[in-house]
Length: 215
Image 1 (cartoon, rainbow, N blue to C red):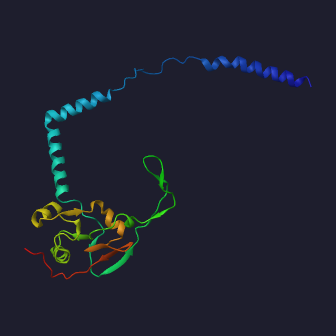
Image 2: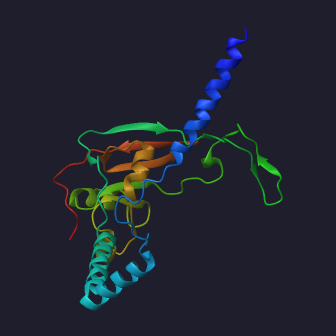
Image 3: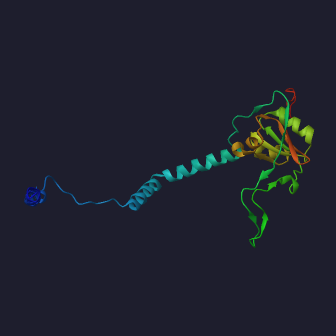
């Protein structure tokens, strides 16, 4: 029984004797340099100054201006939308379920979470929405003949809205990013969205290709 305490004492003594070896100084093993971080703001300022002196800033600004004007005059076409080769129609119910309480400016709940709300009950669709390929004269002619100068909101999925507004003297819109056609499930144009009671009726309309826009 006295052997175990003796072994523990010996082990402690050995560890104590070996401890100084871990603090040994091995000296410098290579060149040591001070840590110097570059001033990122100074680098940015120098880069901008260089671009300004070389005229690169002016060139980049002109390129940005040119691309912006191009996109305004002719926005990116909506992908995945073709010309209607057959007429198809379906009903679209805009009713939504409110996910959280909607309160007024005084904190009073006006619509409770879980309530089903149909926007058409308060904001009716007063004129049809007509989706068109603005580069297709047949579609433009069809829309002009069917809806006249004011009875619809014309929304392009392709084409130059500003140019059409000048030549036709009426407002054209553009479905930027295709958010509306995706919302209604439209895959081909011309297409219309019209209100019937508490639902919307969406129609992709096949038209005669011989139709041409009036000169």
